[in-house]
Amino acid sequence: MRTTIAAATALALLALAGSARAETPLLEEFMRDYTFLLIFLSLVGAVIGFAFLWATGALPQVLLSTWAWLDERFALRRYASLARREYYSVVFTLLPASGRTFPQSHTERYNVKAVWYWYPFYCLGGLSFLAFIILTITGIYLGFYYVPDGDFVEGADGEMTSGAYESMELIMTEVSFGYIMRAVHHWAAHFMVAAVFLHMMRVYFVGAYRNPRELNWILGSILLMVTIFFGYTGYLLPWDELGFAAGSIGLEMATSIPAMGPPMAQLVFGGTQLTGTTVLRMYWLHVFVLPAVGIALMVLHMALVWIQGEAEPH
Ligand code: HEM
Image 1 (spheres, rainbow, N blue to C red):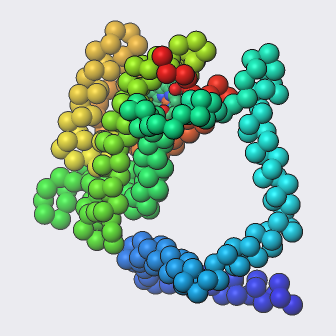
Image 2: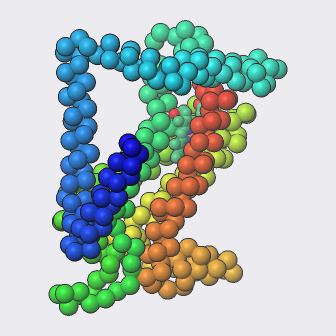
Image 3: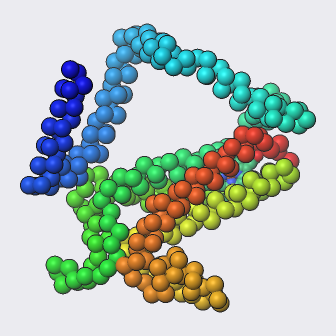
C-alpha cells in the first residue's frame, strides 16, 4: 500500500514537473532564482536547529541516540575502531621491516610542545586541497547554467556574441548569487595555484623530496601542471576577449612546436584555428578530464603521505 502511494506521488510530481517545463520554463526559472537560496536556508536551518538543541541542553542526548540508532544498524563502532587500528598500523603491518607505525608527526614522536615556525607551512598541501573542494562546489553550480557553445553569431544589438558568452552574462546578471559563485570560483583558482606553488617550496626547503619521497615529488609536479592547466582551460571558457586572446597565445605556442605541435593543437584546441570546437574541448578538459586525473593523483599523493608519513625536518 505504502509503495503504491509513494509511486503514485512520484509519478504525479514527475508529471507536474514535466507539464510545468512544457508550458513555461517554470522549473528552470525556479531553479535559477532559488536553488542557492534553498541551500543557504537549509544550512541556516541546520545551524539554528543545532543552536536550539545546544541551548536547551538536548544536544548530547540527540547525538547519542542518533549514534546508537546508526550503530545498531551498521555496527559503526566496530568499523571505527577497526579503521583507527589499521590507520595507525598499516605501514607496520605491510612493511614490518620498516619498523614504522605511521602516521606519527614530528610533534607526536618527540612530544614537542613548542610551535616551530615552519609548522604553519605544513598546512599548504591541505589548503590546496580545500581550494580544490571549493572549486568543485562552485564549479558544479556554474555548470548548471554555462553553455559550452563557442560559435559566433550576431547578437540582438548587432555585436558578435556566442552561447558561451551569453550564458556567462546570464550567470552575472540573472542567476541568483551567480556573480558571487563566479567570483569565489575565480579567486579560489588563484588561491589554489598560489597554495600549490608555496606547498612545493615548503617541501623543497625542508628537503622532504628526498628518499623515500621521490615518487611523491614527481606526482606533485604533475599535480602542479594539472592545476595550471585547470586554470588555463577555465580562463578560456567565458569566450570573452581575454579568453579568446589566451586561446590565440596557447594555440600559437602549441603549433610552433615542430612535428608534435599540430597534432597536439588538434587534440587540445580541436584544430589549428580557434573555433566553437575549441570551447567544447576546453570545457570537456575542464569539467571531466582534468578533475578525473586530478582527483586520482591527489588521492594517490595523499595516500603516499599517509603511508610514508611527514618527513622529518632537515
Ligand atoms: C593539487 C596539488 C597538491 C595537493 C592537494 C597536495 C596535498 C598534499 C598534502 C595534504 C600533503 C601533506 C603535508 C602538507 O600538507 O604539507 C602533501 C605532502 C607532500 N607533497 Fe603535496 N600536494 C599538491 C601538490 C604538490 C606539489 C606541486 C609537490 C612538489 C612538486 C608536492 C609534493 C609533496 C611531497 C614530497 C609531500 C610530502 C611532504 C612531507 O613529507 O613533509 N605536492 N601534499
